[in-house]
Image 1 (tube, rainbow, N blue to C red):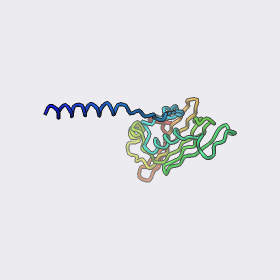
Image 2: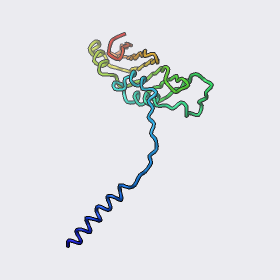
Image 3: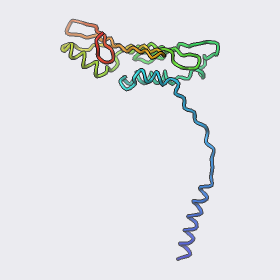
Length: 167
């Protein structure tokens, strides 16, 4: 019995030492966040899902590996479409976003905007909305909502910013 236990113990230790000898070379991983400023400024936490997904697509677009990239041009204008809207993005030759013009129809409004509109226009119903974003590399960003309200046979158009302030 002692010989069996001793054999199992030696066999168990031999398997562990054999497993530790194996080495494998892993490939190099490169993480590039070239357009993180754009994502930070556009504020993905407050955006609706289609808007944030398209903004992530714009930020992660690899210009240098695209079919139409050439070193001769200083900047490129590329439009990204989804059924809810589009983003027109201008990239420099290094693939960094210089500016964007964004337009989305009937997206989920932020809670601040909904609260401000309901407080100021209590008997009006939200009919449709348009979300407009202008981003510039210098840090300037403009977020506006154009909202159409209805009350029976009356219509009204209003504009707010992302914090619910009326323009």
